[in-house]
Length: 427
Image 1 (tube, helix red, strand yellow):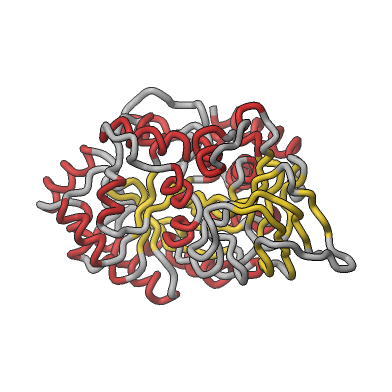
Image 2 (cartoon, rainbow, N blue to C red):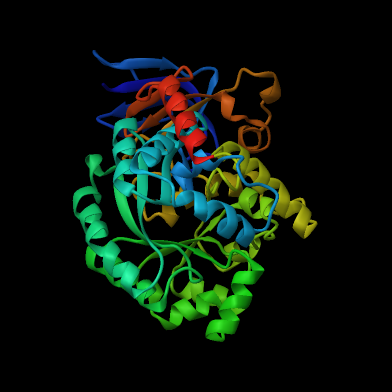
Protein backbone atom coordinates (compact mmCIF):
# COMPACT_ATOMS: atom_id res chain seq x y z
CA UNK A 1 0.00 0.00 0.00
CA UNK A 2 1.25 3.49 -0.88
CA UNK A 3 1.09 6.19 1.79
CA UNK A 4 0.71 9.94 2.01
CA UNK A 5 1.63 11.61 5.29
CA UNK A 6 -0.18 14.92 5.23
CA UNK A 7 1.06 18.21 6.70
CA UNK A 8 3.84 16.87 8.95
CA UNK A 9 6.65 18.88 10.48
CA UNK A 10 9.58 17.24 8.69
CA UNK A 11 13.18 17.01 9.90
CA UNK A 12 14.79 15.50 6.80
CA UNK A 13 18.50 15.47 7.89
CA UNK A 14 19.24 16.22 4.24
CA UNK A 15 21.98 18.22 2.52
CA UNK A 16 19.49 19.65 0.03
CA UNK A 17 16.40 20.38 2.15
CA UNK A 18 15.92 22.91 4.97
CA UNK A 19 16.71 21.97 8.58
CA UNK A 20 12.97 21.47 9.02
CA UNK A 21 9.88 22.18 6.92
CA UNK A 22 6.14 21.67 6.94
CA UNK A 23 4.60 19.56 4.18
CA UNK A 24 3.51 16.19 2.81
CA UNK A 25 5.46 12.96 2.33
CA UNK A 26 4.54 10.48 -0.39
CA UNK A 27 5.74 6.86 -0.19
CA UNK A 28 5.33 4.68 -3.29
CA UNK A 29 6.46 1.04 -3.40
CA UNK A 30 8.55 1.55 -0.29
CA UNK A 31 10.41 4.57 -1.68
CA UNK A 32 10.22 8.24 -0.73
CA UNK A 33 8.74 9.88 -3.83
CA UNK A 34 8.01 13.35 -2.42
CA UNK A 35 9.23 15.16 0.70
CA UNK A 36 7.66 18.56 1.33
CA UNK A 37 5.12 20.58 -0.59
CA UNK A 38 1.61 19.32 -1.17
CA UNK A 39 0.61 16.11 -2.90
CA UNK A 40 -2.81 14.87 -3.89
CA UNK A 41 -3.65 11.35 -2.68
CA UNK A 42 -4.36 8.80 -5.39
CA UNK A 43 -6.86 5.97 -5.35
CA UNK A 44 -5.78 3.32 -2.86
CA UNK A 45 -3.36 5.56 -0.96
CA UNK A 46 -3.33 5.35 2.82
CA UNK A 47 -3.53 8.93 4.13
CA UNK A 48 -2.02 9.69 7.54
CA UNK A 49 -2.66 12.98 9.31
CA UNK A 50 0.77 14.33 10.28
CA UNK A 51 -0.35 17.77 11.45
CA UNK A 52 0.52 17.03 15.09
CA UNK A 53 3.60 14.94 14.31
CA UNK A 54 7.31 15.38 13.67
CA UNK A 55 8.50 13.16 10.81
CA UNK A 56 12.19 12.23 10.72
CA UNK A 57 14.39 9.39 9.46
CA UNK A 58 14.16 6.13 11.37
CA UNK A 59 16.80 5.92 14.08
CA UNK A 60 19.83 3.67 13.57
CA UNK A 61 21.25 1.74 16.52
CA UNK A 62 24.74 1.01 15.20
CA UNK A 63 25.86 -1.35 17.97
CA UNK A 64 23.89 -3.66 20.21
CA UNK A 65 23.61 -7.25 21.42
CA UNK A 66 19.91 -7.77 20.85
CA UNK A 67 19.10 -10.96 22.76
CA UNK A 68 21.13 -9.72 25.73
CA UNK A 69 17.83 -8.14 26.71
CA UNK A 70 17.30 -11.37 28.70
CA UNK A 71 20.22 -10.35 30.95
CA UNK A 72 18.83 -6.91 31.72
CA UNK A 73 19.21 -5.72 35.35
CA UNK A 74 21.05 -8.92 36.24
CA UNK A 75 24.64 -7.88 36.98
CA UNK A 76 25.04 -4.17 37.67
CA UNK A 77 27.39 -1.77 39.41
CA UNK A 78 30.70 -3.47 38.60
CA UNK A 79 33.68 -3.02 36.27
CA UNK A 80 33.72 -4.36 32.70
CA UNK A 81 35.89 -7.44 33.15
CA UNK A 82 34.27 -8.55 36.42
CA UNK A 83 30.90 -8.04 34.77
CA UNK A 84 31.91 -10.07 31.70
CA UNK A 85 33.99 -12.84 33.19
CA UNK A 86 32.11 -13.57 36.42
CA UNK A 87 28.51 -12.83 35.46
CA UNK A 88 27.76 -12.42 31.75
CA UNK A 89 29.86 -15.10 30.07
CA UNK A 90 28.85 -17.87 32.52
CA UNK A 91 25.17 -17.09 31.95
CA UNK A 92 25.61 -16.80 28.18
CA UNK A 93 26.89 -20.40 28.16
CA UNK A 94 23.39 -21.42 29.31
CA UNK A 95 21.56 -19.66 26.49
CA UNK A 96 19.73 -21.90 24.03
CA UNK A 97 18.49 -21.25 20.51
CA UNK A 98 15.02 -20.74 21.98
CA UNK A 99 16.35 -18.18 24.47
CA UNK A 100 17.98 -16.22 21.65
CA UNK A 101 14.75 -16.29 19.66
CA UNK A 102 12.81 -14.96 22.63
CA UNK A 103 15.44 -12.38 23.56
CA UNK A 104 15.60 -11.18 19.96
CA UNK A 105 11.87 -10.60 19.81
CA UNK A 106 11.97 -8.78 23.15
CA UNK A 107 14.76 -6.51 21.91
CA UNK A 108 12.98 -5.84 18.64
CA UNK A 109 9.82 -4.72 20.42
CA UNK A 110 11.87 -2.27 22.46
CA UNK A 111 13.82 -0.98 19.46
CA UNK A 112 10.70 -0.34 17.41
CA UNK A 113 8.94 1.40 20.29
CA UNK A 114 11.85 3.87 20.56
CA UNK A 115 11.83 4.68 16.83
CA UNK A 116 14.61 2.40 15.57
CA UNK A 117 14.30 1.11 12.01
CA UNK A 118 17.85 -0.27 11.59
CA UNK A 119 20.24 -1.91 14.03
CA UNK A 120 23.62 -3.67 14.00
CA UNK A 121 23.79 -6.78 16.17
CA UNK A 122 26.57 -8.98 17.53
CA UNK A 123 25.52 -12.10 19.42
CA UNK A 124 24.94 -15.87 19.25
CA UNK A 125 22.67 -18.20 17.22
CA UNK A 126 22.24 -15.60 14.53
CA UNK A 127 19.72 -17.57 12.48
CA UNK A 128 17.22 -17.15 15.33
CA UNK A 129 17.75 -13.40 15.36
CA UNK A 130 17.48 -13.22 11.57
CA UNK A 131 14.14 -15.07 11.72
CA UNK A 132 12.83 -12.54 14.24
CA UNK A 133 14.08 -9.61 12.15
CA UNK A 134 12.44 -10.96 9.02
CA UNK A 135 9.11 -11.35 10.83
CA UNK A 136 9.26 -7.91 12.44
CA UNK A 137 9.86 -5.91 9.26
CA UNK A 138 12.83 -3.99 10.70
CA UNK A 139 16.21 -3.58 8.97
CA UNK A 140 19.31 -5.25 10.48
CA UNK A 141 22.99 -6.02 10.19
CA UNK A 142 23.40 -9.45 11.79
CA UNK A 143 26.90 -10.06 13.17
CA UNK A 144 28.48 -13.43 12.39
CA UNK A 145 30.34 -13.60 15.70
CA UNK A 146 33.84 -15.03 16.17
CA UNK A 147 35.77 -15.49 19.41
CA UNK A 148 38.69 -17.64 20.52
CA UNK A 149 41.63 -19.32 18.81
CA UNK A 150 42.33 -21.16 15.56
CA UNK A 151 40.46 -24.29 16.63
CA UNK A 152 37.35 -22.40 17.75
CA UNK A 153 37.35 -20.46 14.49
CA UNK A 154 37.62 -23.62 12.40
CA UNK A 155 34.63 -25.07 14.25
CA UNK A 156 32.54 -21.94 13.67
CA UNK A 157 33.35 -21.38 10.00
CA UNK A 158 30.80 -23.78 8.42
CA UNK A 159 27.98 -22.22 10.44
CA UNK A 160 29.07 -18.68 9.57
CA UNK A 161 29.35 -19.49 5.88
CA UNK A 162 25.86 -20.93 5.93
CA UNK A 163 24.61 -17.76 7.62
CA UNK A 164 26.23 -15.61 4.94
CA UNK A 165 24.89 -17.72 2.08
CA UNK A 166 21.34 -17.97 3.46
CA UNK A 167 20.85 -14.54 5.05
CA UNK A 168 23.11 -11.88 3.53
CA UNK A 169 20.90 -9.45 1.58
CA UNK A 170 17.79 -11.47 2.46
CA UNK A 171 14.29 -10.23 3.36
CA UNK A 172 14.26 -7.95 0.34
CA UNK A 173 17.65 -6.52 1.30
CA UNK A 174 16.59 -5.63 4.85
CA UNK A 175 19.00 -8.16 6.37
CA UNK A 176 22.73 -8.01 5.87
CA UNK A 177 25.33 -10.21 7.53
CA UNK A 178 28.56 -8.66 8.79
CA UNK A 179 31.55 -10.54 10.21
CA UNK A 180 31.85 -9.84 13.94
CA UNK A 181 35.12 -10.80 15.65
CA UNK A 182 34.37 -9.79 19.23
CA UNK A 183 37.55 -7.90 20.21
CA UNK A 184 41.33 -8.02 20.29
CA UNK A 185 41.24 -9.40 23.84
CA UNK A 186 38.95 -12.34 22.96
CA UNK A 187 40.24 -13.25 19.47
CA UNK A 188 43.59 -14.68 18.45
CA UNK A 189 45.51 -13.13 15.58
CA UNK A 190 44.45 -16.06 13.42
CA UNK A 191 40.76 -15.43 14.24
CA UNK A 192 41.08 -11.74 13.43
CA UNK A 193 42.71 -12.38 10.03
CA UNK A 194 40.18 -15.14 9.28
CA UNK A 195 37.40 -12.62 9.94
CA UNK A 196 39.08 -10.14 7.61
CA UNK A 197 39.39 -12.76 4.85
CA UNK A 198 35.78 -13.90 5.24
CA UNK A 199 34.50 -10.31 4.98
CA UNK A 200 36.63 -9.79 1.88
CA UNK A 201 35.37 -13.01 0.29
CA UNK A 202 31.70 -12.11 0.77
CA UNK A 203 32.07 -8.37 0.19
CA UNK A 204 30.65 -7.47 3.58
CA UNK A 205 31.75 -5.41 6.60
CA UNK A 206 33.38 -6.16 9.95
CA UNK A 207 31.71 -5.21 13.24
CA UNK A 208 33.92 -5.30 16.34
CA UNK A 209 34.70 -3.71 19.72
CA UNK A 210 37.78 -1.54 20.06
CA UNK A 211 39.57 0.30 22.90
CA UNK A 212 36.63 0.18 25.28
CA UNK A 213 38.59 0.24 28.55
CA UNK A 214 41.94 1.19 30.03
CA UNK A 215 42.56 -2.45 30.88
CA UNK A 216 42.11 -3.41 27.23
CA UNK A 217 44.74 -0.82 26.28
CA UNK A 218 47.15 -1.99 28.98
CA UNK A 219 46.70 -5.67 28.09
CA UNK A 220 47.32 -4.96 24.40
CA UNK A 221 50.51 -3.03 25.14
CA UNK A 222 51.74 -5.86 27.38
CA UNK A 223 50.92 -8.61 24.86
CA UNK A 224 51.55 -6.88 21.51
CA UNK A 225 53.64 -3.87 22.46
CA UNK A 226 51.13 -1.45 20.96
CA UNK A 227 47.48 -0.31 21.01
CA UNK A 228 44.57 -2.45 19.78
CA UNK A 229 44.13 -0.21 16.71
CA UNK A 230 47.80 -0.38 15.78
CA UNK A 231 47.87 -4.14 16.34
CA UNK A 232 44.84 -4.60 14.07
CA UNK A 233 46.45 -2.37 11.46
CA UNK A 234 49.55 -4.57 11.50
CA UNK A 235 47.27 -7.51 10.61
CA UNK A 236 45.81 -5.52 7.66
CA UNK A 237 42.49 -5.90 9.45
CA UNK A 238 41.29 -2.58 8.06
CA UNK A 239 41.74 -3.63 4.43
CA UNK A 240 37.98 -4.34 4.50
CA UNK A 241 35.32 -1.91 5.76
CA UNK A 242 35.20 -1.90 9.58
CA UNK A 243 32.87 -0.29 12.09
CA UNK A 244 33.95 -0.48 15.71
CA UNK A 245 32.09 0.19 18.93
CA UNK A 246 33.40 2.43 21.72
CA UNK A 247 36.86 3.83 20.84
CA UNK A 248 37.05 5.46 24.26
CA UNK A 249 40.84 5.32 24.55
CA UNK A 250 42.25 6.12 21.11
CA UNK A 251 45.60 7.85 20.72
CA UNK A 252 46.34 10.47 18.07
CA UNK A 253 48.11 7.76 16.05
CA UNK A 254 45.08 5.48 16.43
CA UNK A 255 42.79 8.23 15.16
CA UNK A 256 45.04 8.87 12.19
CA UNK A 257 44.95 5.17 11.31
CA UNK A 258 41.14 5.20 11.61
CA UNK A 259 40.99 8.23 9.32
CA UNK A 260 43.34 6.80 6.69
CA UNK A 261 41.64 3.35 6.73
CA UNK A 262 38.08 4.74 6.87
CA UNK A 263 37.30 2.97 10.15
CA UNK A 264 33.82 3.99 11.29
CA UNK A 265 33.19 4.38 15.04
CA UNK A 266 30.09 3.82 17.16
CA UNK A 267 29.61 5.89 20.29
CA UNK A 268 27.86 4.03 23.17
CA UNK A 269 27.75 6.64 25.94
CA UNK A 270 25.37 5.00 28.42
CA UNK A 271 27.21 1.68 28.50
CA UNK A 272 30.57 3.43 28.86
CA UNK A 273 29.23 5.58 31.69
CA UNK A 274 27.62 2.68 33.54
CA UNK A 275 30.78 0.53 33.36
CA UNK A 276 32.91 3.56 34.31
CA UNK A 277 34.97 3.25 31.12
CA UNK A 278 35.15 6.97 30.41
CA UNK A 279 33.76 9.09 27.61
CA UNK A 280 34.74 8.64 23.98
CA UNK A 281 36.40 11.75 22.46
CA UNK A 282 33.67 12.30 19.90
CA UNK A 283 34.87 15.84 19.11
CA UNK A 284 38.22 14.38 18.03
CA UNK A 285 36.47 11.72 15.96
CA UNK A 286 34.61 14.44 14.09
CA UNK A 287 37.73 16.61 13.70
CA UNK A 288 39.39 13.65 11.95
CA UNK A 289 36.42 13.37 9.59
CA UNK A 290 35.39 9.95 10.88
CA UNK A 291 31.90 8.57 10.46
CA UNK A 292 30.42 8.33 13.96
CA UNK A 293 27.22 6.47 14.74
CA UNK A 294 25.34 5.99 17.98
CA UNK A 295 24.56 2.72 19.74
CA UNK A 296 22.96 1.51 22.93
CA UNK A 297 25.21 -1.53 23.39
CA UNK A 298 23.37 -4.44 25.03
CA UNK A 299 20.55 -4.14 27.52
CA UNK A 300 22.68 -5.76 30.23
CA UNK A 301 25.12 -2.84 30.26
CA UNK A 302 22.75 0.01 29.42
CA UNK A 303 20.06 -1.26 30.63
CA UNK A 304 17.75 -0.47 27.71
CA UNK A 305 17.73 -0.15 23.92
CA UNK A 306 16.15 3.30 23.92
CA UNK A 307 17.86 5.37 21.21
CA UNK A 308 15.98 8.54 22.12
CA UNK A 309 17.41 8.33 25.63
CA UNK A 310 20.83 7.54 24.13
CA UNK A 311 20.70 10.74 22.08
CA UNK A 312 19.80 12.75 25.17
CA UNK A 313 22.69 11.36 27.21
CA UNK A 314 25.15 11.78 24.34
CA UNK A 315 24.10 15.39 23.93
CA UNK A 316 24.89 16.21 27.56
CA UNK A 317 28.02 14.32 28.58
CA UNK A 318 30.33 15.97 26.04
CA UNK A 319 29.29 19.45 27.08
CA UNK A 320 30.23 18.57 30.66
CA UNK A 321 33.43 16.70 29.75
CA UNK A 322 34.70 19.53 27.54
CA UNK A 323 33.16 22.34 29.59
CA UNK A 324 31.76 23.67 26.34
CA UNK A 325 28.00 24.14 25.83
CA UNK A 326 28.52 24.09 22.05
CA UNK A 327 30.00 20.57 22.10
CA UNK A 328 27.81 17.80 20.67
CA UNK A 329 25.07 20.02 19.30
CA UNK A 330 21.55 18.67 18.96
CA UNK A 331 21.92 18.45 15.18
CA UNK A 332 25.24 16.57 15.44
CA UNK A 333 23.72 14.05 17.83
CA UNK A 334 20.62 13.54 15.68
CA UNK A 335 22.93 13.08 12.70
CA UNK A 336 24.80 10.33 14.56
CA UNK A 337 21.51 8.54 15.15
CA UNK A 338 20.35 8.87 11.52
CA UNK A 339 22.49 9.91 8.54
CA UNK A 340 25.88 9.17 10.15
CA UNK A 341 24.60 5.83 11.40
CA UNK A 342 23.72 4.98 7.81
CA UNK A 343 27.22 6.02 6.75
CA UNK A 344 28.75 3.81 9.46
CA UNK A 345 26.84 0.79 8.14
CA UNK A 346 27.55 1.59 4.49
CA UNK A 347 23.88 2.30 3.81
CA UNK A 348 23.96 6.06 3.33
CA UNK A 349 22.78 5.67 -0.27
CA UNK A 350 19.60 3.96 0.95
CA UNK A 351 18.59 5.30 4.36
CA UNK A 352 19.45 7.87 7.03
CA UNK A 353 17.78 10.93 5.48
CA UNK A 354 14.36 11.79 4.11
CA UNK A 355 15.49 12.41 0.54
CA UNK A 356 13.44 11.48 -2.48
CA UNK A 357 14.55 8.16 -3.94
CA UNK A 358 15.66 6.64 -0.64
CA UNK A 359 13.99 3.81 1.25
CA UNK A 360 10.98 4.94 3.25
CA UNK A 361 12.39 4.38 6.75
CA UNK A 362 10.82 7.04 8.96
CA UNK A 363 9.18 7.68 12.29
CA UNK A 364 6.43 9.97 13.54
CA UNK A 365 6.74 11.62 16.95
CA UNK A 366 3.66 13.03 18.63
CA UNK A 367 4.47 16.68 19.32
CA UNK A 368 1.19 17.36 21.12
CA UNK A 369 2.68 16.73 24.57
CA UNK A 370 3.45 19.14 27.43
CA UNK A 371 7.19 18.44 27.40
CA UNK A 372 7.39 19.37 23.70
CA UNK A 373 5.41 22.62 23.93
CA UNK A 374 6.31 25.22 22.80
CA UNK A 375 8.12 23.71 19.84
CA UNK A 376 10.59 26.53 19.32
CA UNK A 377 13.25 24.34 17.66
CA UNK A 378 12.12 20.88 16.50
CA UNK A 379 15.67 19.45 16.37
CA UNK A 380 16.36 20.55 19.93
CA UNK A 381 13.00 19.17 20.99
CA UNK A 382 13.79 15.70 19.60
CA UNK A 383 17.24 15.48 21.24
CA UNK A 384 16.75 17.32 24.53
CA UNK A 385 13.07 16.79 25.36
CA UNK A 386 11.47 13.89 23.47
CA UNK A 387 10.72 10.53 25.06
CA UNK A 388 10.43 7.08 23.49
CA UNK A 389 6.74 7.17 24.41
CA UNK A 390 6.33 10.06 21.94
CA UNK A 391 6.95 7.70 19.00
CA UNK A 392 3.52 7.05 17.50
CA UNK A 393 4.46 5.52 14.13
CA UNK A 394 7.39 3.57 12.71
CA UNK A 395 7.79 2.73 9.02
CA UNK A 396 10.52 0.56 7.50
CA UNK A 397 10.86 0.05 3.74
CA UNK A 398 7.46 1.67 3.27
CA UNK A 399 5.60 -0.64 5.67
CA UNK A 400 4.21 0.45 9.03
CA UNK A 401 5.64 -1.76 11.78
CA UNK A 402 4.10 0.40 14.51
CA UNK A 403 0.92 2.47 14.10
CA UNK A 404 -0.74 4.61 16.75
CA UNK A 405 1.76 3.21 19.29
CA UNK A 406 0.73 -0.41 18.56
CA UNK A 407 3.22 -2.92 17.20
CA UNK A 408 1.83 -4.22 13.93
CA UNK A 409 4.09 -7.20 13.21
CA UNK A 410 4.82 -8.45 16.75
CA UNK A 411 2.68 -9.98 19.51
CA UNK A 412 3.99 -7.91 22.41
CA UNK A 413 2.10 -9.75 25.17
CA UNK A 414 3.41 -13.14 24.06
CA UNK A 415 6.93 -11.79 23.59
CA UNK A 416 7.10 -10.47 27.15
CA UNK A 417 5.68 -13.66 28.68
CA UNK A 418 8.11 -15.92 26.82
CA UNK A 419 11.08 -13.69 27.60
CA UNK A 420 10.27 -13.78 31.32
CA UNK A 421 10.08 -17.57 31.17
CA UNK A 422 13.59 -17.76 29.67
CA UNK A 423 14.92 -15.19 32.12
CA UNK A 424 13.68 -17.21 35.11
CA UNK A 425 15.60 -20.26 33.91
CA UNK A 426 18.77 -18.24 33.27
CA UNK A 427 18.60 -16.71 36.75
